[in-house]
Image 1 (cartoon, rainbow, N blue to C red):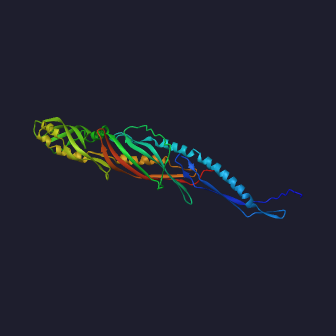
Image 2: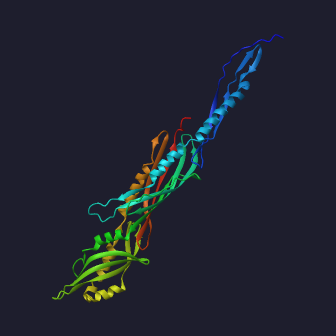
Image 3: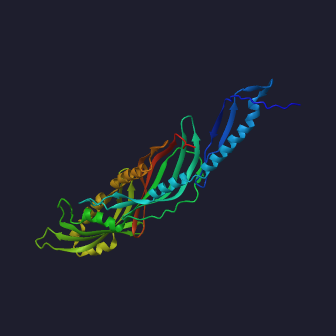
Length: 365
C-alpha cells in the first residue's frame, strides 16, 4: 500500500465562556470558583474525500487546555493576599482614639476622646445582580469615651467570621466615661460664686464657695461649702458650713442631658446649719430647687460631636476607585443608659447608620 501524507487546514470558530462565583474564605482569601465552557461552531473538513467533524475531534483538547488555564488562574487568585493586606491597613486605621470635644477657651466642657478598638471581623458572602457584585464587610469593636487620648492595642484577627447576608449597617455603642474630677469642673462652674435666693428676697444670703460631686450608693452626693450671712438684724451674723445634698442621676433622652432628681438634704447638713441659725435654713429650699433645675450636664455637644466624628471616621473608609464604591453614613445617635462607680460616671450612647460596599468590576485576571 502506498502511504501518502495528507495535509489540510480548517478555521475553527467558537467561544469560551468563563463564569465566577466568588466566595470569601475564613482565612482572608477570595475563592473565585471559576468554571469554563467551550462552544465550537459546526466546522467540517474534507480530507481525501472523507468528511472530518473538526469540533468533535479538537474540543476535548481545547477543553483540557482551558481547564488547565482556569486552574492556574484560580490558584493565583486563591493565594492572592491583596484582600488581607487591604483589610489589615483598614483595621490599623480603625484602631485609634479620635478627639471629640476640644477644651475651648471659657468652655466648661472637658476634652474627650473616642477610643475605637476593633475586636472581630465579619463578612457576608457576595451577592451578584445584573450590575454589581456586592460585599458586606464589617467589624465589631469595643468603644469608650475617655478624658485623655489612649493608644489601644488591636491584634488583627487570623480569621474572618462569615455571617448571613443582611443590608449593611452600622451600630456603635459608645460609653461616655467621665471621671468625677471632670464633672466637678462642670458643677463648680455652675454653682461657685452663686448666691441664693438668686433674687435676694431671703432673710439670709447663702453663697456657694466650693462644689464637688461623688458617688454615694445609687445616688450622687453633692458637697457644697457655703457662706451664709443674715440680713434682717443689724448684727449681720454669718458663717461657713459644709452642706451635703443627695440626688439621683437620670438621663433625659429627649433633651440629651444628665440631671439630678430626688434632691434631698443630708442629715449631717442639718447640724451644720444649726450654727448659722434658722434663717440660713430657710435658704436651703431655694438651693435644692436650683440644684434640681440647674445641676445638669448638657450632653448634646458630646452627642453631636460624637456623631460627626464617627461619621468622619467611617468616611475614611469610603472609596470610589478601581471598581470599588463604598457608601456610609451615621443617621442618628441617641443616649441610652447611665451607670457609675466610685470614680467614673458612664453614659451609653448608641450610634446607628448604614454602610455598603459595591464591587462594580473584578480585577483583571
